[in-house]
Image 1 (cartoon, rainbow, N blue to C red):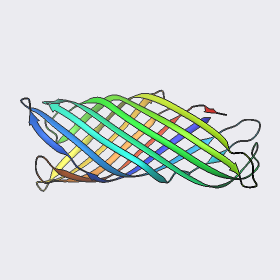
Image 2: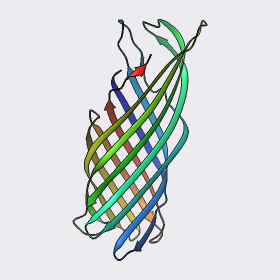
Image 3: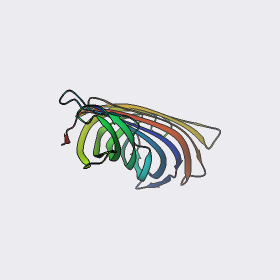
Image 4: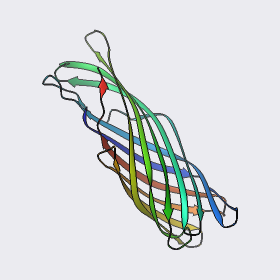
Amino acid sequence: MKNNELALLSVALILLSGRASAAGDTEWLVAPYLWYPGISLNQSSDSGGGGISASNLLEKTDAVGMIRIEAARNKWGFTLDYIYLSLSDEGVFDLPQPFNGTFNLRAELSVSVLEAGGFYRPSGSDSGIDYLFGLRTISTEKTLLVTPQIGGPTQRFDGDADVTDVFLGARYLHRFAGRWDLTIRGDYSFGDSEGTMNLLGSAGFRFNDWFGMNLGYRFTNSEFEDTIGG
């Protein structure tokens, strides 16, 4: 499969964050959060003069889980972020050679993204600019079921990929009106992928040192190659 592009478009609904100070001046953040995700898988193949081309196959979320953990002391900190998504959908498509006909397609996709890295904050506080660095691993498992409408056996295509990149970026948090804040983040990773761009913007309200809520928008685009069996 060539030029597999995985576009992960997420709208954040709620970010529940717990913050505590322990072990001296070390600051901790544990934030399970909930996203409303939209995802599109654009896949193409070229074999025997024909191929498959499909986009926006996946719209239904089966399972989702995400959490972020951070610890910071003075100007340095550690961050761990994990995202898991399971999606599936189906539809009717007219396919070219070697299929050449109308088929029922069912697509299933699971994606897990793990970020582990550090950050440097020149201000020494959680307000201002943080410079980010670390490793990002993206794991995908894909299944495509192709069934002819006129009858016949279902063909199954499976594929999986594990992509590990180094990411570099920055984020900025601005506090205003006491308990309100605004955060923007951008980073770019490279390595096993042909490039992954990650952008995030959110606005938040902090009820106290232990509890806050954020509403935001996240966009991640990753391009890599893998092989699908069959």
